[in-house]
Image 1 (spheres, one colour):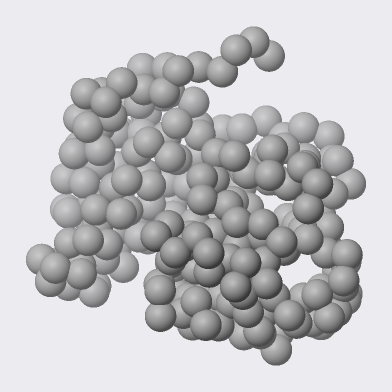
Image 2 (cartoon, helix red, strand yellow; image 1 turned 60 degrees about the vertical axis):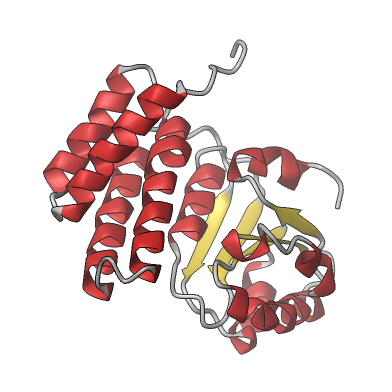
Length: 221
């Protein structure tokens, strides 16, 4: 496979992110896709586009919403376009043979921002995992039934909002009660400046950088 390609240059990244933000501001889905195509032609990998283009653009959209510079509908439109971009990117990746490993991916109770969880689901499925994506706002009471029925090797919970960290522990406990040998991994913006919250809520592992996901799920708990 060779050595991994270097990250795109900061100048190149900044220009493309600004172009994507312009397309998101205008709710212009075709223009957003053209920005992605431009990045691919420059030699970016699919993961480069996810983490160096779509992700920072989403963070900036979130900051603008928090500062009341855009409305909630504008934020929803931008997220919808980015979700479409993620699906389009996933369609460009050739799937390897199935590994037999199974992952359950969802968001903590009350968490409505599910694009981070979707990226995780795509990353795993593109590396041969069977992925069951529960999406946003999965109550703690919903986990035991699906864990017992589908018997995942790993369960990953995404949380972006600090106020929702209290909801993570009950979900992890429900997972472990249903399947003690299921490894639990938590991640998302809520943990960036509170990494200790991962162990406090009983997670086996904390994922702060999605690009390290495959190494994380393959390493011992």
